[in-house]
Image 1 (cartoon, rainbow, N blue to C red):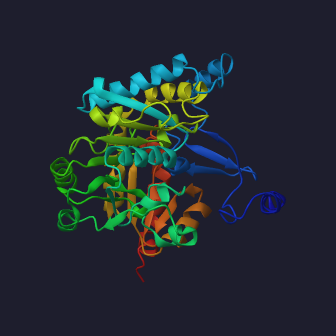
Image 2 (cartoon, rainbow, N blue to C red):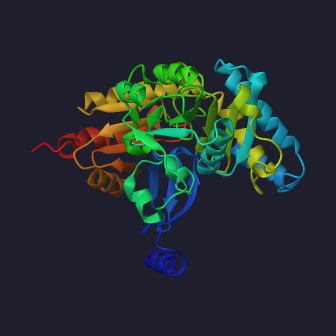
Length: 388
């Protein structure tokens, strides 16, 4: 395997550092590295592989679509593209929106979906202020980067083309920031990259009230939380309804695709020539997404049941757990060390902040498949929690 690491270092830009593993295949909730060792995948490509690896429905859809059309550009439409847009209308309708007023713009990623949303805010109120939350993450392209709070991500590339005004995710800070010049507020229902931190109670409802009062767009980034990850289609919908929703990650089950959905007036802001994409909404990605969503639809209750079981077992072992569905943050003393120890025991997680490991496994995972992870966490609880 050392040869592969050397080849990686000599061929790829040093953007991600040395990879933890070289993975060669996957099956269900497991992956295998180039030495043939199997790992329980509790990260799923960072909340992407909703159906795990090599799911038959996804493979069949990709094979069938590849035999018909892979790419045609957006000079033309395809049945897969139209059907997926209608499916997303159906999904937002199931979450309490007016489905008939929803309009979809397809992208290749969550970052691009947020770029599209940022453009919509300019069309909505030209020159207006854009608010985002401290600890937010909305992507790393030059536009989306203006919405991402972490200074280390932004500083090397400044000056940026405008930067959002970052406010603490507290209701008092939200109220103090708003006036009639605010064009939009971007938020994540659960701040995944910050450490799986849900917004405080009442924050989203107050955000909706202030956006209505000041004619601002409420843009909800459901890139990580959407499409079944939290046990429902949209994590935010029990609390508020957005003007713009951005999606990606689990939307394609591992195939790159994103979506920016405008509701009502926000869905009518783009006119021909305002925006574009070569690959966004290509038939292969759309077919993959349709297959993924068809399977996820059957898994929503399962996600909630497994989440409740896993949370209870981890809490019994003394861990503090936060999040919803199968997007969970587990408090530990040293997340980087715990991540590495779990990897040595054959379990993949990641460490979004110094004291949290993030769990975002495939939505198909069962309690039986999670049992070995729970056993490790229980057996090493004192060590992982920093107790002597």
